[in-house]
Length: 114
Ligand SMILES: [Zn+2]
Image (cartoon, rainbow, N blue to C red; front, side, top):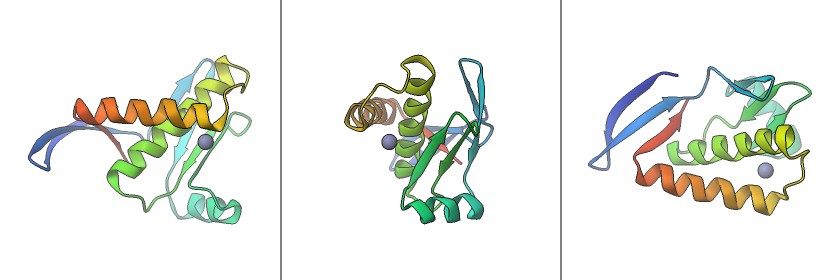
């Protein structure tokens, strides 16, 4: 993954580009952040989605940088849950894990970007 550093709010932020996709278990998962995925998300009134069947994660494109990083972590946790936990975590558990990880990564100066 590409990695750059940039000053943000006076602090060094390491930006990790997420557009290349990820592999979770045996699943290669494509990350889509574009007009087409925005339309699909708009039709179901969601900011993001994760489908193992389609092997893709869709992320809304017009979020704040921190919002996009948060949503990416959230959808990656859904992918991990689907692959390793048979989709057994609740939405609240996923959100708690994702928000906790976001806090830690932001403290460490790591952010996922498109
Ligand atoms: Zn969710």
